[in-house]
Length: 79
Image 1 (cartoon, rainbow, N blue to C red):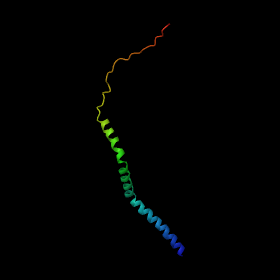
Image 2: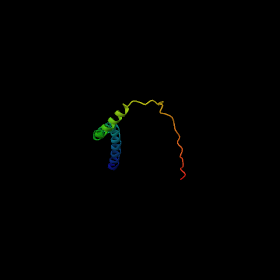
Image 3: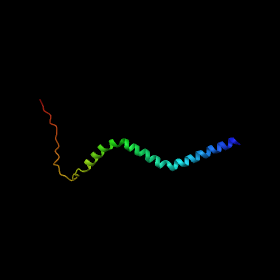
Image 4: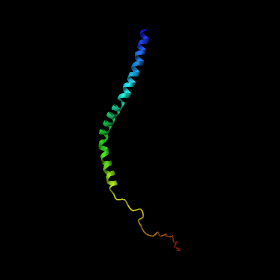
């Protein structure tokens, strides 16, 4: 009888641990992501500055007239 109660407690412990882990997983993920963000924070600043500088440039007009197209032909020299 002692073997079956031990197996029952083991299975019950696994279910309780899984339930508690499911409840605690959002907090664990938040902690891990904050640590990762803190570790990688130095790499984010230069990228954000480039992105903000790029977004501040004025947009060019799409219908800007540049000029006429000239088609050049090759001329062979007879020497």
